[in-house]
Length: 221
Ligand SMILES: [Zn+2]
Image (tube, rainbow, N blue to C red; front, side):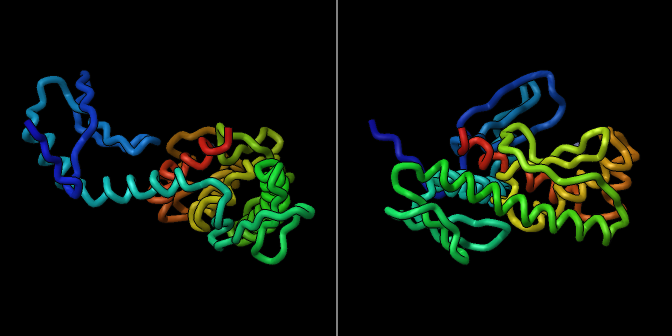
């Protein structure tokens, strides 16, 4: 017997039934579509739900597919701009928008250049957004953390992971503003989100978008 799948049709890979009250769909880092559903939820309705979300699912899958390509072989987006990657027998350097990376230590060389870019651009952008939105902070530091995009300490030192510069510009701005709001309110309670919203009306969109870019952090192990 042959089973034919319509490759253009969005489907699911797994349904997890639990005590939850609503349906939810996620696309994991392997591009698998996982549906979370209340116990005994009718399959027909799940399929209808998936069909409605088809466009969103396909966009997510596309992102995951692109994430797999994140292999320092041809190009990379930094602060929203496209940079080329060229292997060299010479020294590590950044020339305009070209990364020259020695073949034998491509990964480390890329990270050291990424650090410099992050330090320069995130420091400047934080300064700009702080003055535009009337925030004050202590200083900006850069890490290679894979567990967060940004952090704000009790003494208002803001630390970003260098990988943040691999996100689109609006996402970067959102993270910077988020951390600047932490200079005023340290927790994530209602008042905090009100403050974020007052400075950036699109915060919900960007918070969701940011989650989609978490694959970047997974690419650097
Ligand atoms: Zn926060």
